[in-house]
Length: 467
Image (cartoon, rainbow, N blue to C red; front, side, top):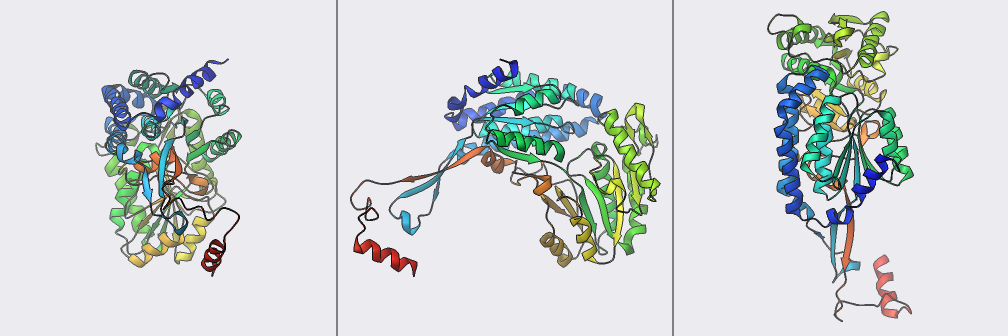
């Protein structure tokens, strides 16, 4: 027996114990995880700086997401666990109907590298709140963070309740071959398909949080200076390695020149405030590895070779894993950058004159994880909220819908994912919603006229109801 299979069986051995654990016990475990995480704050600052060149405040924001989810779940899990009474129908009159949310069993969370602490812990919060044991497969691209996450869980919870697995694709494949009850995956569509197929072999439910090309629609009525400021931040933060990051802009043709001028100004104002150059800025992170650096640089080069105009940026340093914050315009559909998610600090800008052009552009691409609308026109905003599909949407801002409010469920739709995490919706995703009907046995309510041989009274009752 492999070590991974043995570890999995250890996690499975606690199913009944955890299913029957109290709300107070689950809340205490969550708070223990937060205390163990908080104690390693400085180590996580160092680790993510090594991996992605992050500023400490960038990591602190990630930890605030973790803290918010833990505090919300710990406060509310008792209410979530209570049976939910539901109204009777005609057929269940005199009975008591309820929904009980029961743990699924053992959950696998496959985390990504771009926010390795939050992506490891936040799905685990939902799993633990729902009474499951949890296996976490950390990203091999963020090994320093992975080691700390493993140490956090080793300290916070016993081995039969939580285990962290480090390693590359072979470890993920071995885990996916095991009969987990639920799988949570963060990453791209290609691996997402592999996860779904593996889950199908064991009839496991899944939550898939993937990305795609998230569009930004900027109306002619928009506050362009405000949009440029927010989009400069939204595209450059974490070096663009953000699943909900704005990928491309569709702006009314009358506002294009103004926007291009202002976003270049904002990139420099925010990320080169000390005048040392963008590459030397402490606010511009690095691409996670050489392979992804080469891929992003290749997308820029392909676009410019096919006629795209560099508004700003375009530079890179492979040894430093640095991609200069870049804005491109005059885009065409034959450019590779318009067909795949960049996951880097590169923003493509297109124009429109009619809103139907916007719909056509969005529909040419996979369903996005996020959609952003900048406008002062309520009718314009409602048109795109009603006529587009995305996992989430934000009006007059970007990247503020994930990890900021545990009452908002977060996830994708179609090619950008399925299922939800965050607060109660995460708890529900990790639970089996079990319908329970209680039949009283007193003679006034335990009426058995529906059993054969059917009486004339029952026949008349049903036939009348059908009319």
